[in-house]
Length: 385
Figure: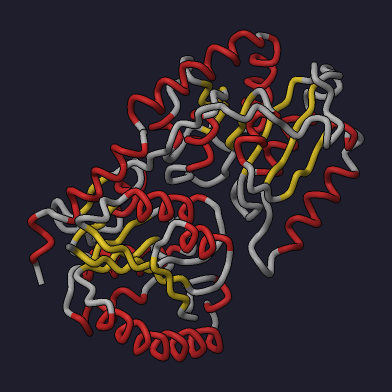
């Protein structure tokens, strides 16, 4: 039996949160004992406990922009070392054999590795572009201290390699996987949000932040709405705590658009399949390269056609012209044009959705994802101290 301690960056239910939940619940419990440590209480904690996963909450700092100032650095270091003793005690209590750090924003695995002298896997879900010093720093630290760096896409790995610190064969790509829904529930939000049954709906699902591209999606949509009176769009997701102003700003732009009766803000929804059932086409318009968005996997698994900016992980997931369209990144005119193409050919959207579902089933299933990590945990690197 191998006991693995997972250090995560939050307790919500977005991309990397869902990936972690999927991994630890899917592991063969005859071979592995997962212990998940979270820096806060939240929905992920409840989901883990519901699945009988041992979960601990330790208030350790996560590498965020709020610490990028003299006072912030002092606070970060103080909280970091206070939490490290607690983490060490937990690791010894559970007799941990391996540390799995989930995302670059969690640096606590470095000191923990030194203290308990166990191998460290660093699971990277990010492509950091700015600030440049943070990309360099996290690339250096992961290369120096990780026995293996797991990336969620080849694009993520190539970006880390550009920093010049990774050792040969240190980086391995393991694509996220997903359990294909059985479509037992076909309910949607159309009646609740006043969306007609015959409306053609484009949807955007994801965290509201500086780069997920909600504004690009809104601008591209507004170019089309005068020409297509049955076209509606929806947003689902919320902002990080402390950045609620982003939601307020988006709602203000919707209200002032002149088409607020056809633009629907659903906020965060736990029932994500119900959100996908409401739309015809999923749009991914992240202005920075998205490493490998779980929400795009979910959309394809729910048989939705995809329109995505052509950079980052989606370019490895979406087959252009077969499961959706890849468009010139950060080009709102190209995005709008492609939305126009697909709304003119509704059968095309249905065809892309069917093919996307097949692609997920064949190449991005949950079992393949979990099996890859189980083999990794049992691999030769494991015995390196």
